[in-house]
Image (cartoon, rainbow over the protein chains, first blue to last red):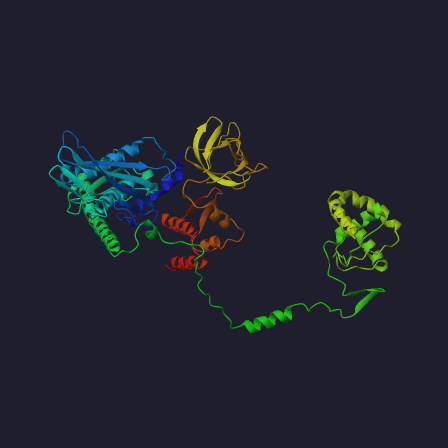
Length: 441
Length: 168
């Protein structure tokens, strides 16, 4: 899928906003978004959320023969993947420039800084060493992938536990997690990348750019530092020309940020450690908050009952008086009486034309009628006529169906011609059903 | 994901200008086409001034699943009735389709309440895109954030937020 293009309008607005030192989400120029670290059930699995950008990291290990030119060192393997679910512009299997750049940055940050002690990964020199593999998957792209990825990577490495190994002479025993507790990796320091986005040829700079800001930036400077204020890696891309003061200022800002983030990571790791030791529940299922629709709690709303009485009286006085209650039954014919006259029925039209049609076809008419004041003039005249002649049957139920045959009225026939032709098709089906009902008796 | 429907008014971003036809991205699976003659008062000599990256508010003339959707910026009587190129300033952002329908309902409280805060111009596209322009960048940003948050806020929370802003 193609990514949504950036309109000129947005670009202009973002640049103007940055000139006024305003960011889309209300942050300050040097503010980071919220960083959230959550661990999975396995050792070495974690998800880092930097605002809406999400990266999943997984560490795994394997015993392999070492590289021939480094027989006493373990092997480190880093891999970052941009999954299509992260952004519409990412396609699987296509090596884009961005992907290559990010991968190289992660490698330089974690490998070249020697944060992991590779010598400790050696089991039998020249024969067996541990290969540690770090896989990073981008789950959602909302800017600043590199920061989130570096945090995820280092956290996963700190969290990971490899199986314990003992060497006795020629024998190598690898203990399973049940036999002996797995051992953490030996990590010297935690390098973390911080990105700076530059706008207007280096005049304005923002820390932790979001996706929109990344699209309009001129260039980016990434500095990887650890909490001991040692710079591990630096990379500037986009072709902007930076002045010495700017670079120094950025490195000072980085030191502050890295200290904060490292503290956060330590706390998260300790928490997880504690939970696991106490036997509590851990893993992603626990760290994702429950958002059940069925568990929606409605706060009781206070009901104002102060003037309910007055309101009720008002309503009663304003309302129309109830319609007359008919207590006296109307005697139509011996054996047939009716209480009340029934309400206006909107099916009256239907019934009238049905009646007329039936009259035409079979010479019998079935009546279920009523007071239809809303009918057209020709119909109302027939109603008035019929009112006097025909008894009115109130209900339409099968049990009480009373069919009273009465003599034909010729004037109706001429008028019905025009009527029935129009309403023939729709009323026919209805008519058929009514005839079937009659036939059932 | 937005599915183009005939008659829907949407905001599109111009991605290509080829000869007589502009290609617009409307957030659907295909790009829509817009002829340069589909503007009010456009003739072969008098072409509209549209650049790549501009925003256009128009309606769909043809939109079915077999063909590429076509847009126009005039209605059936040839008048533009508010459609056409959207001005240069202002900001475009995306919200869910449900929120757009809520905002387009006849008496939408959200818009009424917002209009009491500051004056602003607003264009709602049925494809989930909203264009806002207020006097200053700060005001525009506030409106953008409120509209985005309206999806998840209840009426109470919204009134509180607006009261805080107008009191400030």
